Length: 213
Image (cartoon, rainbow, N blue to C red; front, top):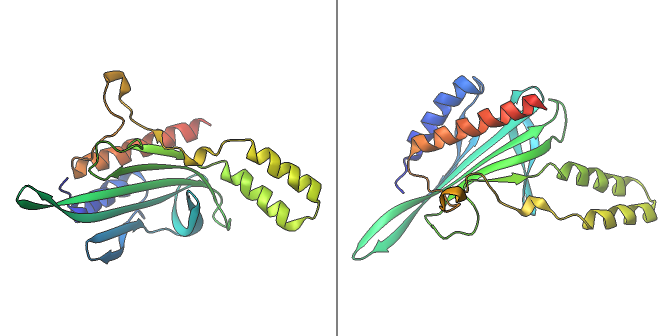
């Protein structure tokens, strides 16, 4: 995949300023050797949970009590093809929706949409995909309770019940499996406009669903 990071960021900033917020702007966080990382400028703090790890991020108000976090990472990798050395670009796109008021110290991360293209048609995880993270709000409440109170029997009961439920945050839920056409759940990223269309479609769909709840 040949990708122009600056062109993509420019296209995303242009269209998202019109459809999301005039404040929307993806900025360079760092450029190091063959890696480039861009994140959305935010105005309020939140915790972005990624599997077993987490990081404090800045989120931008979207509408009502919903907030966005957006990050894109590029990495240029040199590969041998016959006698030639070619450069391929891998890309990781992550878009999270949070719920909370402006002054809330910790907003609830509801879900995360991701599209990673490692130029591997045999990858096991669906691309693009969803991560459902809203259950972490309940887990955080339990953790805070255990830190505050000393009713050990009740705490043990809560922990026991929590362990009975499978942790769905680990699952990559396919967004576009295309199985009905007997095709793969791996969708390659072909060009910059394809990503812009995907981002716009995801956000339009999410806003429609959130408004109907």
